[in-house]
Image 1 (cartoon, rainbow, N blue to C red):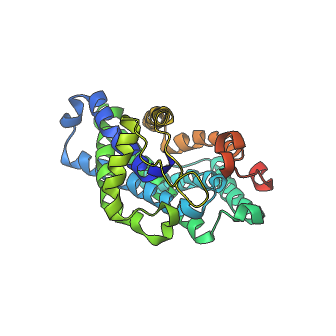
Image 2: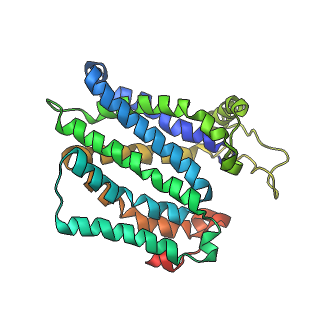
Image 3: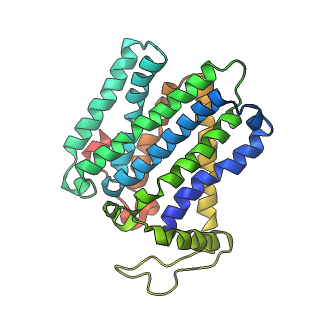
Length: 291
């Protein structure tokens, strides 16, 4: 559904609310206490802000560079854990975080002109800034679990975080109208039409874009008959990823949850360079990717 990117972005957040509401049951209302709700609200705001910055920065940040910059969340989480949780890390852990930072800097410096064609420094910095609220949200989750008097249910936490994230995304809708977004810009007056068109395409399998499409400088034609399959797959794996990440935070730490995600970096780099996956948008792997 390439014509409904904004709609899918909102859907992938909104769909969490009813799913986690069912999974949490009556526990969601039982934990609706002011102090805890404030923590949930902070997590939701951080997650919403992180997603918005990623959208803004991703306009002129290549896919491979996005994966690379996302690894900065590990040293950022370690720093926030030190100040907010008073955690102490072994010298090897600190060295590992430093290596990640150096690797990002060297990879950016080593990127050639072909790689830079999809990158602009200002947008790279904006995308990089997205890791700060992302890390803050995870550290706040760890704080909620560690300082809760009892066993805080993962589904309850994620339900309330999703509610506040949806509200944050709604308040940030005007950001999507900024001209700097280029082809991803969505004027406010078009948002209702995209919601309707995207829903009809996804749930009713009705093609909305059928004319003046499929050629150079035109929109991609809709193929709604099979659009639901990759969307459903994305939503299922995304929800599982969220649940497993929060479980790791609950039973271990926020830093470990992000450390595990480094395993996806080489796989993502290969995916972004594969024509079979990315088609014409594939980015050839360069020396910085091997590094």
